[in-house]
Length: 346
Image (tube, rainbow, N blue to C red):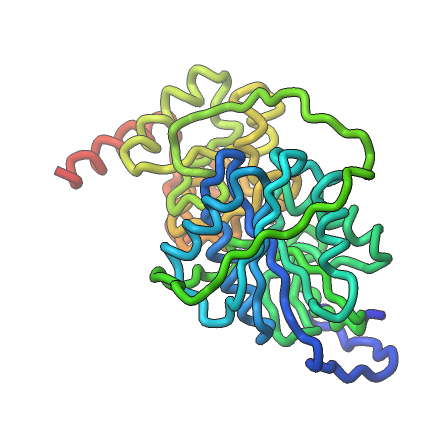
């Protein structure tokens, strides 16, 4: 079903494939907060969906879905978006995959949609595998480039190789790395209608949402932040991690991130982890403070536009990926850098 090409390797051909656009249409699941706020990744997802060159239907789920759908209509402009549909059942409130996936599977029946796209967020990673199993389809995950309606590019081996995948499946199930795509332009879509989706009887697994214990910081969301200050092994305890990184992040209105080593050592919450097993980010500016540059961490931030590395080891791998490098003790450099930035902002 796939033809796979890795850069530098001649692909093995597995038969011919002709893509038919007769019934081509894209269903895009737009992520929101539980209270109905549009997630910033939604604008990137729609930009990625445009690359498929199909009419787009945006799907919102949850009891507050209508508010998010209206926010999209009033805030952004996407010429290829021809309809917005909302599923407002209370069972969809917390986006449990056991509840959301059957809904999407029903929508994908028949020839209405040829593609389904979702972001490679926690929600997308929960929903897509279950949906794929339900309709007996192979998903294509973490896409960073869409070359055609059936040809996609994604990283493999922790980002050390890039694979080009050509799929002959009648329906394409795709998750995209939102940070790899631009955002659709701001504006309004007054002509786009919002329609309710009828919800079938609740015959799925008896899963019940109990509670959530969330960490709130008041900072920009790590997945969509334009500036990120990230810390690693240079900090010996949680107090020093916060003492040195928070003032710099506050000065830059930045999100705070961390390596897996920092998380494992109890320096910060695991929601801040960036890397192969954490969040994938691509901010305009990324500060790597006391981070050596292990391949697992680089997989999560190598697409940042500008990388500033601060490390006392001149041979640290992070310097090979950095736009600017400051060699020295991070505990001395960071406070001085913070003060200089504050002075420049006056």
